[in-house]
Length: 74
Image (tube, rainbow, N blue to C red; front, side, top):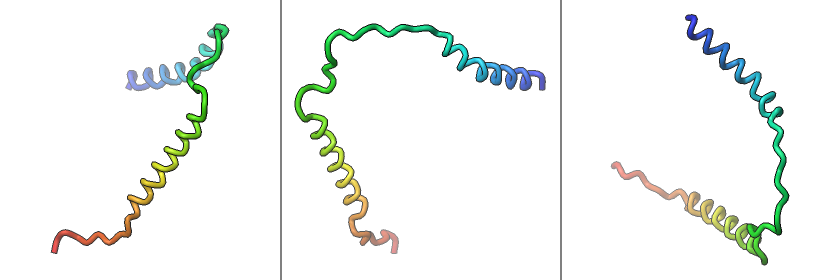
């Protein structure tokens, strides 16, 4: 019984102090050198979005293939 109460108190204490500890950490971000190359040049984002939309549409079509499945058991 004591261990359970101690564990509950420790959990409550850690939940209460976590935001304060995160706020107390004073970190400065480093300046960026140059531009990020993640986006690349061109329309690769649009192409990726079109491929994702096509995959979603294909998944919906495959999932709803007419519903004419007959049971295997007789």
